[in-house]
Image (cartoon, rainbow, N blue to C red):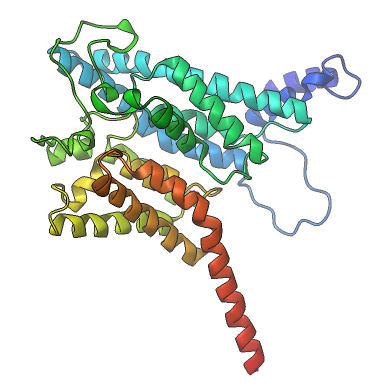
Length: 382
């Protein structure tokens, strides 16, 4: 039925049709809903069922557990702070109504810019923002105003993606750039007392919170005189303050299994991030530089989420097999280093990934040149 509908309206969008100016929009919607029946003509030696649309679809599926749990946790944190009891569906419903507008704004603004750019260039609409549009609402505090989110998304899509040529050409992860924009442009909304729920609660829903209620994320309180950390169980389950999709280790682990099983994410990169972060955290803890153990550093904040969904981005990460080990290890090590050494940046993962995004081409270049030199020496000896 869907195919017949698109076949019927296609002539209006083709050359000479009255809606030819919207050809890119038509192509984008058709490729999103249907598998293309066009095949390559000549010069193709490998055929693969995986294309960018399927890759993005798998990543979105992998993000769903973190998103759904994040919605529940938003309601849970609100009801806990207000001293109220609620059923599972009341808590989830509250979080759903709080997070859904951010997802809608992210997709409307981001895809709107993508449509305009594709139409202006006369190119097909790329599927890359299907993932970015969901990632951005999951890595920011739920209290972030919608207009700030819209600004961050617009900045990210234009200056971190389209200016480089679109999907597959960007050197920085667009979702991380959106978070960085908010962090540096509006720091009070991204850290301190406003990082989670406050008296001016989200969307004006539910009961007023206590006047004395303020809650920073566990990492945000590292430099406080009295450090109150959640239990290990709460860290793993995710019933702690934090950005929407970053709190539950279990939900993120489910997403990691999906990405690894489908072959979309590199286990080398993912594993190296945890090894690098764990070793540096253990070293700092042993020398008394941080009160957190190595596993607390890994479980708190956006470390797990960044390692699974951000560091493994196939576009902005290292592509050589050995380079992936170095790339991932440096992300984990630098993230912990920033957390411990610079109290102004209690998270660290965002800046670590951005830094290594910039260095990923250099890492690949070094390993490629090393391989070329080895081959040249073997050829000389023969």
